[in-house]
Structure formats: C-alpha cells, structure tokens
Image: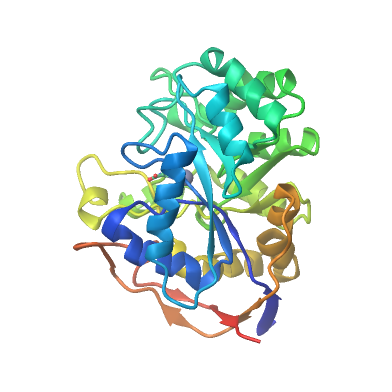
Length: 347
Ligand code: NCD
Ligand code: ZN
C-alpha cells in the first residue's frame, strides 16, 4: 500500500506542558490530530475545573490561527479532590476525564493519590456524575521490580477498583504488557486502553542492548518483546477497546541525557508516521483508521472528525532536535528515516 486516506485522528493522551513549551507542543499536536486529551500533570498540577479552563486558554492562545484543533481537558486527582470538584468537572463542557497518578509513579506525580482508599468517595462521585477515570497503572512500591509494576497494579489495585465501581468508565493508559491487554479484553465495555506508538515499535532491547538510550526511556518502561507483540496484536485486532494515545511527553535534551534522566518520549511531531510504521509492519494498515480515528470518539461518546488525513509512502528524516521554549528536545528516533508522511487534507 502506497497511500492511505483516513478520518482525521485524535490523540487520547498527550502532555503539552505550559508557557513557552506550548509553542512547539501545540503546533505539533494540531498538525495531525483534531482533538487531544490533555494531561494535567503540570507543576503544580491542574486539580479543578477553574485551573483546567485557564490552562485551556493558554493552549488555545498558542494555537496557530485557522487551526481547528480542540483540547479536551482533564483534572488531576489528589487525596483531597472533593465530590464537588468532580461534579463541577463532570458538568463542565470542556472537561472530559480525571487522571489518577499513584503518588511517585512518574513525572510530576508527587501530588498524586497516596492510597486508593483515600479516594473512594471521589470515585463514587465520578461514577455518579459520569466522569471517566484515566489511570497511570503502576504500583510505586520500591521493592517491586520496575518491569512488574503494571501487572501488579492491575492485580492489586485496578481489578478491585473496577469491581467496586461497575459504572465507572476507565481508560488504562499507555499499556505495556500482555497482562494489561488481557485485563482489558476480559473486562466489560466500560474498560478501555490507550497504546503509544513507541510501545508498538520498540521493546526494552531497543533501549538497553548495545548501549543505554535515554530517549527510549518512558514510564511505564518498555518491556520484553513478547509484550510488544501482545500490544501489536491488540492495536491491530479491530477490538474497539484499544485506541490511540501517544503519551508524547517533552523533556529538554539535557534532562534526558543525564545521570538520572527524565521519563518521557517526544512523539507528537511524527505521531501518525510512527503508528503507520507499526501497523504496516503487521500488514494491518487497514486497521489504522479504526484505532486512530474511530474507537476513541466511540468510547467517549463523541462524533468522529469530519476532515481527513492522507498518509503516503514518502521518506522523511526525523531532525536531531526541535525547539522547546528557550532550549530544545530530542524527538524519538532523531536522525532516523520514516517511511511514511502524514498530511491533513483540506477539502
Ligand atoms: C510522562 C511525563 O513526562 O509527563 N512521562 C512518561 O514517561 N510517560 C508522564 C506519564 O505519562 O507517565
Ligand atoms: Zn502520559
């Protein structure tokens, strides 16, 4: 296949950051995606509807004119999020979900939830008012091996949470394991998952064999090949519970190439090119549109985008660096050649 025309896709999980970073991140996401679920893990985090609305204004102010990208805002759950915060967010027309970061699990999660017991009434309110829960699914116990943290979270925390809240819509974010695929497949229709391009394209050997490559380091961390294969199978299966979420997460180059480097891969600039590569590798390009453009809006109860994107087999080289505010970042796969090029069709 040399060319593919699909409905304009959406990104159901992205980090845009704030202030001057928005110049790059908002431009990049809006070049490809019609809408995106915006992660609230700023420092300090976005914890209520008011803060989400000011953040939304800053994102829109960074949007190039005549671009019809829509940011879908979220709030960050803490131990002290109230039922009133949830009601206000659920009733707000621009807020689509609340995000659960176990405290200490990832970048800017220090204010996250320290124990699920502390947010039972918050989760009850989310169930009552119909606000979906987005989950960073990893335990944080220091004695648990980093490669096991997702599978153990599912068993110890997520399975009980889902059975206690049968009416709650839950997205297990950026899944990385065969156990997560199985959990989502075996759960009811309210439980779904996003999958990143980098977890489809890579496994831990790409990050660690022959030298340590910090730009492949993200959380949840890349796993073994068998898990990558399970994710590829899920993403290309046509099962509507699995849809696109890039988890594009910018960090400056110096913060990644460091003795203690930050977690996060920047994929927003070439997101659909990476996904096309992964799906083409499986001989499943015909499944890309459902995954990227249909299953997400179906889950959230939204209309599909009406404009289209063309993907064509034309090489492009990923630049070594992109600007990020007054400094720069290194995009995933910097210096490598992509087989695909994505462009929006203006009809
Ligand atoms: C994300 C970030 O940098 O904000 N990092 C990452 O490795 N994915 C946070 C997250 O989604 O875990
Ligand atoms: Zn993320």
